[in-house]
Image (cartoon, rainbow, N blue to C red; front, side, top):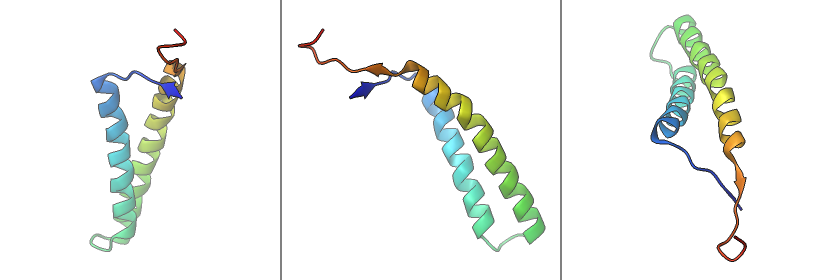
Length: 73
């Protein structure tokens, strides 16, 4: 098992990127606004979500440590 320690701001950034992805999906699937505007906003949110997720994933995987049980320490 792997264990990662994250700070509150890191968790907030991760949650923010997930929220942007959800908003993107909702806009792309809804019919409430002009289709051209909807696509432009949706694709922009998707791009921002992907661009901000890549460094966060790299940071989290950089912090990964193999979990050692108290008996192994």
